[in-house]
Amino acid sequence: MRDRARAVPPVAPGPPGRAVTEVVAAARRQAQEAYERLRRYFIVALQAGLAAGLSWYVANTLLHNPQPLFAPAAAVGTIAAAIGNRVRRTAELLGGVIVGVLVADLIIQVIGNGPVQTGLVVALAISAAVVFRGSGAVMVQAGSTAVLLGTVEPSAPDLAVPRTANALVGGGVAVVVALLLLPLNPVRVVHRAAGASLDIFAHQLTVTAEALAAGDPGRADAALQRLQTAEAERKETTEIVAAAAEVASLSPWRWRRRSQLHRYAHAATHLELAFTNSRNMVRRVVALLDAREPVPADLPVAIETFGQALRLLHRDFLAGRTPEIARSQALRAAEAVQRARAEGLGFSGTIVASQLLIVVGELLQASGLTKPEADRMAGV
Image (cartoon, rainbow, N blue to C red):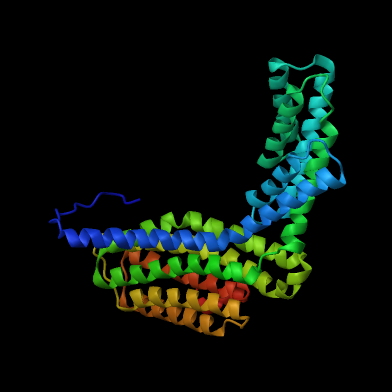
């Protein structure tokens, strides 16, 4: 957020046609974003549908389970709740059900069932999950299982064993579907998700460079706000990259992509740090322009060049190439920073230069260099 508000002069209303054009353009952007989201997650919908049908068939037809509803629900929950870490999600699902069954069965045997007993059973089941360091998913499953068992009539069939079996069936089928029957294409998924995220990142760096060159603090502030709102997209991309790496590691049909996805997962860690530091750098650019500090011509050039290096790194990874071109572009950005320093910078400008060298070092590490090599080449 800005430290102080900037006065905005009144703007005369434009012609009606311009307003219509802006509305149409906004609607097109929304439609394009919706299409991209659908294209990115459509495979998840297919996986969930297939897993639900198969888990119902296994629980009802093969195991003759009289209460098979939880099996497809568990399968859908495993598929949809977490794009990555499906194996862990299944273990959490089963662990929560088992904790809920054990606690509920023990307590109900002693005090019976009813509204007060149900509340007590749920509280104890969730507490037991917490004691065993269960995640939120474990606590939810433990609590919901306790509710189910605490509200059934004493004369009703025992649901503890069927619910446990359904959890095992649903989670197991979900893993089989996600890793064997219908695994996502890890490289394609990373291309769609990470590519869009990095494009936003790099574009806002270009906007920042242009604002710095033009002395426009308002435009730099707009770039900062866009980077801040992109935080959710970046976290989503991190989850998708983790899912792609999991599939490449565990699915036999995707093993040939393992080394490529391993490199990208390693790079993603450093790119997250680069994103955070770049956002702080843009915040300092706004402060620099507000203070009317000197802006050497090489400083916006360095920011723009670093944004280009980000785009090149992503393309090199997806093509399976050693990112030599991206490294060279990042080093050009570092050289431009050093020239800007030599010309003279103010307080905020000095911080911008330092942060820019740090993000160059992170990009070089993302390209496969060690930290000492990257720091030496970037001049950190």
